Length: 259
Image (cartoon, rainbow, N blue to C red; front, side, top):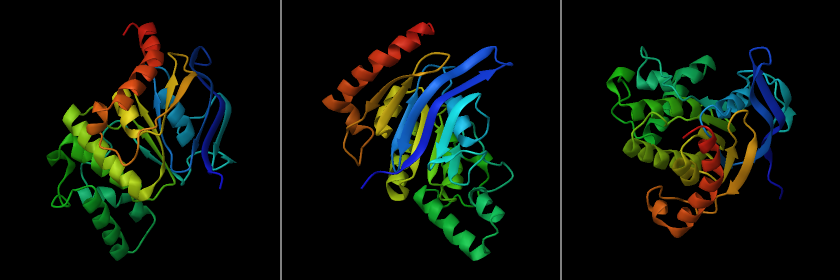
């Protein structure tokens, strides 16, 4: 049976300042059902711009975006977005933050409470239901933001460097939590990162972008078996070989930026 195509972008371009700055040029790729794909490249290459165009947050200057083989038209209810910055509301508790989308959908209170309780359990946030974000660690706030998106059951999940500001230990814990949640819900995920270790650990494929203006440079299949232990796999020969292969391509782009 043929795998359903969830995202398709063709010759996607974006310019800013009335066409004077080309952020993205001629970007084309596809993401399929239940696939976890990482989009990686140097800072300023247009990774987040591509994600924001797919999400319908900004319009493309050229090219085409298809969501479930239909032309994208603004923000789609089929798409969830987890932002890089902390987006939880400080005046709402953990449970109230996670329930926000369900309130907009006007689901009955009992249904909301049941769904929120399940998300809190999956995120290992029991005991913090009534806590406010100011009392939580950065990693816990990101779990709240993730659950707030997942509770809406989007078919497609877009993630813009959601763990970029966290320390290594917290990041690895959240990688493991994310993979566990993804194995349960099996959304199609497009994950923007500048961290090659993160991209390899999480993904089925890694798409490497060039420095600005961003184009697709190479696409790599990550053949590491699932389920994955994000710490243990880094000690394998297969992981080391994938890292060398992708770094050869990615490192050239970092060098162009003087990194």
